Image 1: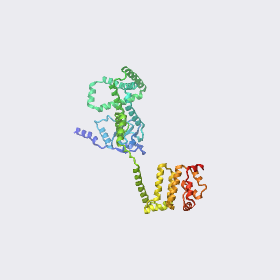
Image 2: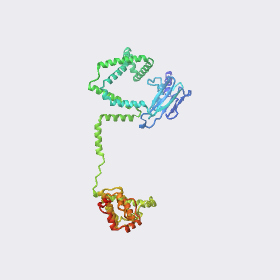
Image 3: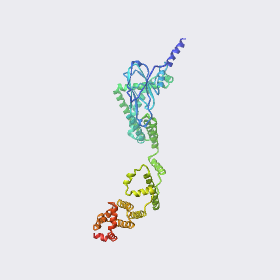
Image 4: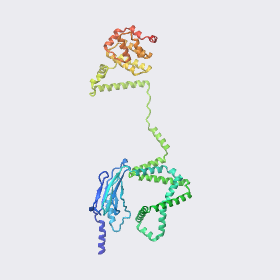
Length: 487
């Protein structure tokens, strides 16, 4: 009967509900919490919900700072508050021991996942959650991993790097030699039985125990640790010098592959965004396996496959045909815009040289006159032969609009064509043209200015030109260069 009560009491601790308190913390808020005496010796669980994964936060670090004067506390971590409570329940049973528990006052949390930390202590403490947006240690680890991967072929055959690694490995291996010598002094059978019974949990407990003792020795006996490192370093250097650098190609390849594996591991562990670091490792491997020249050849082939086809050149007939089509299209668009309510007709009329021609084109949809077409053909042929400039185009636009406005005769059009072509062919300057018209009436001078593109004609000037200038006088103006040279 006593045995039955003992079993009930023993299992009651496992199924009993643990009184606890859960705190959800955010790094950007004022989250400096103080654990008072009311919640002492009770599990306080602090949780961080995490954030969505983004490449911008790849170097971010979340830290939980525990301000506690002594080391008398218990710490449990998990992905949720329920997982932390289950670990606390398992630790309270009589046959379970928390061999692998850790006590850290600065705990790094995953920025992208939900993480909870449980703390049990009898002392008052402060706890705070901080965020480091750009952790330079992570960037340094990432850069070291890339450098080790890229420079592994050169470092594997470098003598200096060989001696540095040999001395470092010898200094660290000497500690293992001391542990091996101490294990030889212990009885073998009890140790073997204990490892068989306890399994890997006892091994982890012993490793943590040794690591804590090594840190304590390194802090309290710094001078002895320094002498020990110097002695083991000298001995390791002598052994490396006796053996000599590695010369076998296969051994060099093995060292290179090990260094590259360590570099990829550093890159992978440099951030909590494991998907991004793993993708970068794969990209680095692909770039290393495929040489840069092969990548260039592949990119050139892709460019040849997907580059746009060159545009075919147009013949002269196709050019004129396309010009006619585009002109009709542009005129139709202009006609539609002028007829739409978006067009302010009064402002448009004020900007036009010949409003009647525009109205006829918009309302009646009439084509250009025969005289306009003839002048256009003569002018375009002259542009093709002698070249064009803004002055000639301006002269033609002014003259053609003036013809439509004032109705000049075909003979006048012909006179203008002969006169303008004479100016373009013989290269007369503005002063030469003025010299020819010094003895003529004012209307002729105005007509010369009109030809040069500096003024417009009005109705009175056109009538004055038709009445004052005779055919013989106009022919005298169009003499050869022999007469112009005498001027």
